[in-house]
Image (cartoon, rainbow, N blue to C red; front, side, top):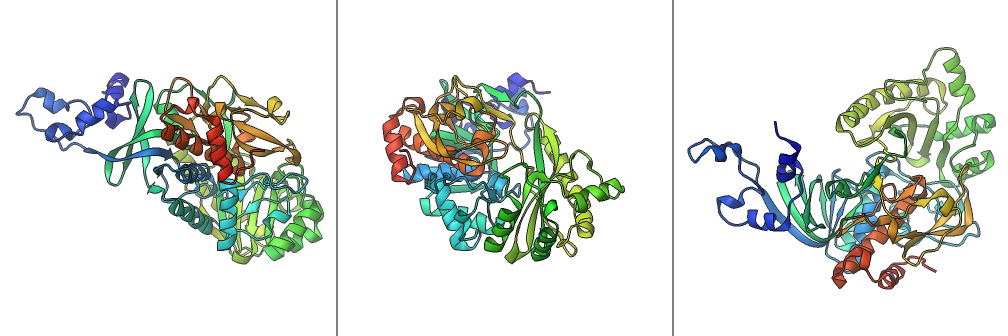
Length: 506
């Protein structure tokens, strides 16, 4: 059995490598075949028969590597490239988007404007929405309503591909980070794996947009786990052949079924107008209890609130697109403290069963779903928070409520009041200090849920996590250009670069 100490020395088991070890190991001859150490057979002598060993090669050297291609990673990679850096994006899935696509949550909180109608959020988040509108993924009137910017999953993937390609980012889909390359406390690269085998990618700076702070974890940065208790997560699925006009007529005839009370708290009138104008049906996140359609059948024993590991199957959030007759269903919660591969594997398998169970019920009880079917289940569960940065400063709800300003701001968003989530006429800064790990140089965290904030919702919603990613990407690019650590970067130069990319910093 290999000990944890052995793993720390062995890159094939996810340990940390020094740059000198990598350069030496990637030299010519047989000694360059492996990145570290001898095999057990080699230790026994030259006559021992050796099994074929995985080879590791140096696959590239970049100014900035972005780990994780969710929407925050897309923002980070494109922003760094537009700031002049040579950039690579590494993503496990065969497409970009993360929670928005792999977890089937193609619904951006519409937090781009303040209550006066002024556009606050520009840059990469706005670019993504504009590209999706051009492709027909999102409706052109997205900015006329408080409802979410709901978009078609496949066209959303295409929009993000185009963003990355047009910015000149090297894209590595189907690739996972397995180790950090460290040199004297600085992260100088990543050990990755994909169908081409084990590889090392070197970087002037790395932006961790994995959402679970995987790179920071591998680099040994101090991290929190959870928020004092097991976080609640979701498994989503998408229905096809849904008659949303019939669903609209049902709500029009039964307005008490369309109950707000959580999420963005659209009134009945707002929800119906939203559908009439955009063709998007939005049912509040865990707010609409659907008394006639769901609660009464539960009372009759026709449906259960629990299914395997999932709880609260009577709390639905749904968003549908009329023109393609699809409906994303978000129901059922599961808990998990930190990333757990076995747990996640179980959730995906059980989630597929849950999707069929819920769909069978909806066909019978929710108008518009009679002829629907499960078109897709999520590639990955919708994880809300696991690991996040432990820093000297944490953005808390109390601080956020003051609409704070910071000299090291790398982004600005619209301040949202909680419960319900209403926009305000105030803004808040995302300070660089929330993205910098302690004790590790050459690394920034660029995803909202992985940054130093509590609760995660302060930075986690999709436009804000893109703001975080964009700020981290530009900071990384400027730091590499100037040859300094990210925490010592010229913040004015970063802010000037962000302004050039359409970020409102005033």
